[in-house]
Image 1 (cartoon, rainbow, N blue to C red):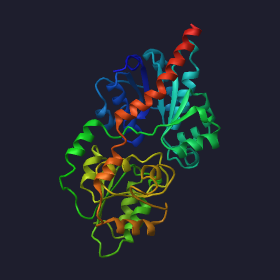
Image 2: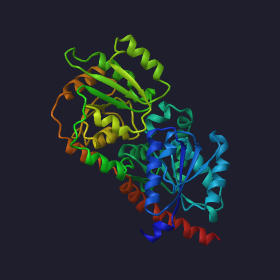
Image 3: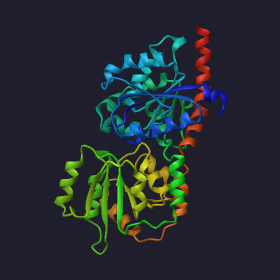
Image 4: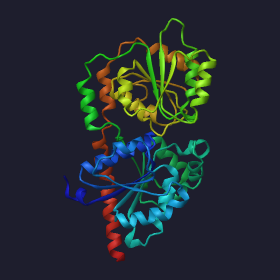
Length: 381
């Protein structure tokens, strides 16, 4: 353990423990940072939810007011109380709140602020499912008041530079995402030779929200060739579920599409699947694609901004199709079912996104920024 790592105190700010991909990997990153010796405090608006059970016992939790407008002053007090060196915020609305909270502190008490952009700014400004995020993207000029910005994709980095005027020198792409824990990697590797696949079993995983494109996927399944046996499992929860269930029934697919609800263990689903599908209209990254690949499961994904193309290396590790094209999506799914698969190559690609490796990459960015902030604080004391 590096001595400077042991001394760094990091606050990870998230909206809640409800189970979204951005929240899940923030929790897993927090655990990995704690394993590396950092003092980690998770500051959360909504403390109820399944992700809370994933937190390492060495990670401290501070719960704030559920309403964002009540949280800026409480964020400010939390930063002072926890004596943080670095604040890492995700989600657009929280990013703006953290900028306001940190900048309201006296220079000698101010932690370094790193914003993690987990969305697609150019799309989110009009189409993010949460109004507070749409409003926040209209204030993205405040990103320039942070000490640094991390994006998940090169596309999001370009968005912030080209559309929001964030200086290029302020932005880094976190190339390794905190998705696969050491325990999961060991389990997947040990179980790689065990045949568990169900022929024709297709899994799609994610929040049931309009931007995930589930309606297009259901329409695509209605166009599948009659001679192919398939069963689609839609794993996740969200406001779109009643509409999707009605659509599946109207298209006569009620007996072939299962709405499975929230998954505590996504890997168990992908290990049994013959194929994973992502039909998103846009993606901040696409964690479920990495989870599927790590299980050796082939992938069909829409070529949406910005994650799938980067994850699949321009189609080398999975089939890419245009968004909002159910007929092309159906054709791609039909071609993948029953096809020979190099599962080892897929698994190796997915296992690149290890939590501890991501934490090390983050610390390489954060430690110099924290040291600079400390020097500034000492000068102001």
